[in-house]
Length: 240
Image (tube, rainbow, N blue to C red; front, side, top):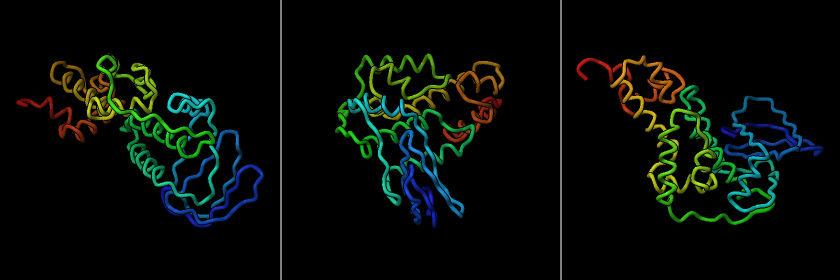
């Protein structure tokens, strides 16, 4: 819940409807294949994240060596500050529309899935902590992979596979090695490519946006202005 909401009635499966005032940060977990019912009479602001059961099982196996992991429901009214913080990050990024950073969204959802497994899975195993960054070999491999694929849509799982790591371990190790998370590294690489094309070619700005991994000219313009404090048109201005 991204804002308090009074008088919500909800139930799982055949349980009797329970009426309550939902507080800010309330987390509701609806496990796979469990029916739920919800009734509300006023506007509510909440974020719904759907994660495929197969994806959760894969995370559980890769991160915690769990053979099986089933999420359990929590009492209505349960507040989870970590889930709230992640939900607010997702809301703010999704609100950017075509400017949303897809790798950032995928990273946050991955972290959210790991949080659910740590705290709300029936079979919980203490996660292995990542003490260091990537090996020199893995760092070189993922750097080369990003260099050759920065313009296409990439997921955390894609990058983790290059390093033969689980997604959660990869996110931590990559950040320790490169000093920034994967989504920021990728964004800077795309901006560098766009600047080079703007300086050295006669491509239109729309073509430059496509070639450097942005969804549209407006996406490139808004992102470049936000992070480089200049627009593509200004880069091409005479005398610059």
